[in-house]
Length: 345
Ligand code: TXA
Ligand code: MG
Image 1 (cartoon, protein in one colour):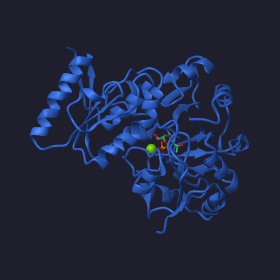
Image 2 (cartoon, helix red, strand yellow; image 1 turned 180 degrees about the vertical axis):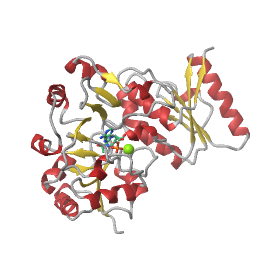
Image 3 (cartoon, helix red, strand yellow; image 1 turned 30 degrees about the vertical axis):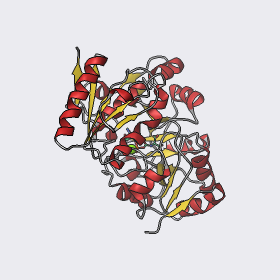
């Protein structure tokens, strides 16, 4: 398939026509790039699953650009959902509602619910408005890979498999939206993201967290089907090392020399403040440890950069599970397949 590269906002009309014809367009959002199709066209939606190699039991988020688009897709808008909408839309928050029959089965993977997001990025908003369509859009990566935060990474995964890629620069948040189930009595976080639990609670009071996100008990199935898959993985093995900082550095450096002796390329995901402490030419900074937002923005690009460098194994420092640190560690733990070493002295 010929993939058109679109670098200019005057060409968005072309992308809107592709979507109206049932085609697939990758597009920037404020979180990560999305792979868009007409959410109401089963065949177009099936194309998304095929291009990404995505398991078809993993439902998609529908993106809208005004609240009138929400009403036909959901059975009701509970009060707590209304309050969250007023505070956080447009923005990096996805809400799960009871779906109407208008939402195709393929979009919601047969579930009675549907995920909806009103993104704040002007390019996807224009695309929705110009096409006049609600757009189903997962992250625009091959299933299992780290989500793309720029058009070049989308091209790496999907060039030749989709109709167009819109280049709108780098995504600012860098991690996918927070997913909150509002179809139940107490709003429940199914995937942590840039809108944190504390931010949600400041608006609606108590917010629950899906127990499967906290407890590693395999018997607990996450309520967001996508959270059960291995994810965000570069080709390199990812290992998280947490605990007492000097013990962590010592452990990582011991392991780095072992890999070096065995002819393996071993890297570290560190911070501006700690990058120089590791004995490898592949010590990559995720940003300043004083700014977790910066670490979130750079995380997926850094994981993909490990593959550019052909790294075999990458060690990463842990971050405090506070605020957006919760989402950073959720993505890191999944990319590491929960391969975590704890060093206490
Ligand atoms: O920031 C984002 O959310 C990005 C951009 C492109 O908007 N999209 C994104 O989509 O991350 P995706 O498909 O990679 O992740 C959607 C997550 C999956 O974990 C999926 O299982 C969950 O949302 N999800 C979708 N519909 C659901 C539903 N009805 N019930 C529970 N979880 C649902
Ligand atoms: Mg994804």
